[in-house]
Length: 280
Ligand code: LIP
Image (cartoon, rainbow, N blue to C red; front, side):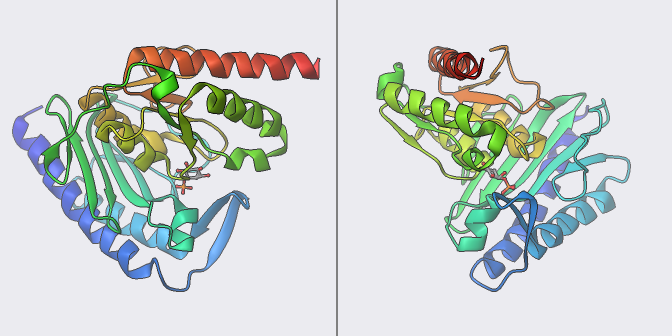
């Protein structure tokens, strides 16, 4: 692909991110119509749709032959990722945070070309944090290069997880056991309710690891930020295989280095095993 095309993709995506972010900024403290999707832990507002339409409308006008995978317009079943340039969009990640005015919420745009992420943008317009990465060119916060944390041991690590899955009947036991296990092993845990930003916090070096998987978690939560992490020197692996992530299978352990990622993968496997033994 010519470099020219990549520049146009990036500039167009940044412009649309800023337009989308303005809608988020203007609406975060106002009234919202709230609907449940999979449950009361998976919410959507009219602004999710409005932002998604703004982004996809703009991208379609600029790149009529590209494809799209986006939270509000792609159904439950993900399409197959092809070689065709495919934009992967979460109009508002951290929707529950957005609803409450909790300032950890963001607009997410990623682009895969030939099944590989080449561009990732995660923008929190409330805290004015614009995370960007392009394949092979490093990761940036507001234009300044960022790097993952140098911490080597899990016992010194701040780890993020999602507690919301405790609300899902068939995930409750495993989620509680996983959280308990990581709380014991790490220096601290945080549960922020916003996958893409949490992944960017690893890229920024302020969180050492993050584990996310579950109903409602999809490619748009992880694709753009996984490029931002790898460009910042971190790793993003599949929770089951421990191999580099397939963005179409979003069961993710991300970390500042392979050792910590391996430890988290192992501890989650052990936690699941304990629950399976109890159930038998
Ligand atoms: C959210 C994720 C978050 C998870 C929420 C929700 P959304 O995505 O980013 O990590 O805890 O349940 O799925 O729906 O706000 O884009």
